[in-house]
Length: 267
Ligand SMILES: [Zn+2]
Image (cartoon, rainbow, N blue to C red; front, side, top):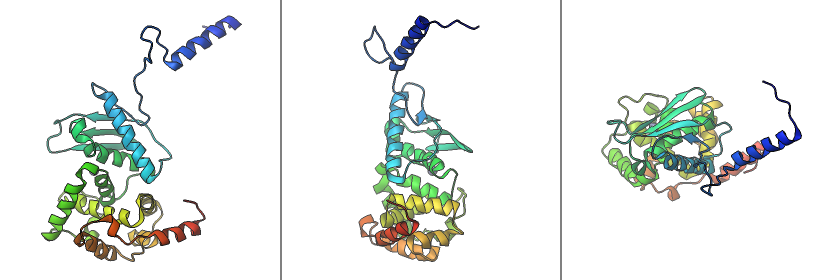
């Protein structure tokens, strides 16, 4: 159907649009629309609180690691006690994240499972792809700020019990089965490297490792000055033995500035 537009009709249409856009609500005298997340969608009773929590997580990740060039909103579900032994998961379907799920309550998920899974989703968009599981789980574990002390205890317990596998047995393995050490050692080695060069530098290292590097040695030597995984391992285990304090690590700051200026970019 085609309508003849008059000046009056256009004016009426414009005023309706403005009312809709501002959420004008004469009876309640307050905005009628509920909070809308920039990054996720949640449904159900806790939807608004979940969306606010996820937005805060993504904003923290952006401040730490940089802003993804592309982001597609995905669903987040928080379903306490539905997953059995599984705490949560992130589901992808290239090129998008489909779903993030936590099987803990929102309260229990905060600083823990939700931050972990949202970190997987965040890095999927930041890098435009998936990447090595040891590094991926290590990054996700590092976002669990409420679990940090427990994770460091676990690192020390397993290391001193002689349970650690060499990094060369874990890097590039990309299998979950029989490798709970992916999480423990992944957490610790990422923690150590972030201590050496900061979060942004680590994100650049992972991007280079994923998209440009010939191999892991190429990326390690370009960003951290290690010629091999074994060299990294020796330095990292020294950090574990010394008490896992990031402030005690040998910073790559000088190296960072030189490389940045060589690349002609600004911080
Ligand atoms: Zn994970």
